[in-house]
Image (tube, rainbow, N blue to C red; front, side, top):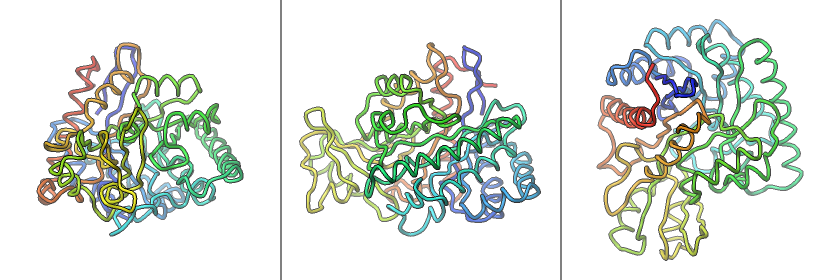
Length: 387
């Protein structure tokens, strides 16, 4: 879906297809038909945006074959869909039985990460509509925090410089694509302060992808965070509209029982507790609840579990949608559009507590459509006009 901001900026709203398991082109084309087309029909939208996730082998295959990319573009068009953004954070195997820390490999110290990201940018340059101002690709925030040192940072910066040169060539050909590194709890770049410290004055066409779930888990207020990024010359290339799960009173037995239902084996659910204005950290929800060093429950908890925007959690838990609302109002409010790509990225539908999971493909289509309707209504409430 497209919207026009009062300042004239065209803002794209999409949902991310990393919620669907597919490792080859036929699988992606089926996603497009069944889910993308189904969500568009459910919303009654003339055109719907998809933020595609392409596993590394498929991205390489598409980058080497304009004919295969054209097949993908035709599949999007026939379903009434368009793509201006790709999610290149997971490299491959994102729906393996256990993902956890594997999602951070390869990282930006490895050429495989550079090559994958360049492949994605090249594919997106061919996929995005001719009237789109630019494309965006999101990627991991350098690496997981350990191991990390000055030598690894220098290597990563060298790879980002090579990435920038490749993006410059695309821009010179009239197909501009920007790449956003996505701060995430537990990573080398976890917060906006880390982004400023490690990524300030980035090479051309490189900025940040602001994931609002991650921002909330770190108990970062959006206003200071956005100002900090702007002052450091870090553009918000893309925003992932997502909500975390919050436990206002994690010392309450009923609350802890409800939280335990979100502790699952596939994805990492970094958890933070706010005590005396400072977040205390554990790398996964089960560690926070009952590991060797559990969090104490003296302050509220937020956990990195991307929860459906329209229905993130039931009492005694809640979602961080108020935080998301504040972030969107600052990004797209009357002061002007500070981003033009918004992607709903709830990839956790199939690992929600069992009673909250969608039933079958039709249930997932309905859930994604409800999330996008929620996001659409928030954008129009800010004064953006659907196109």
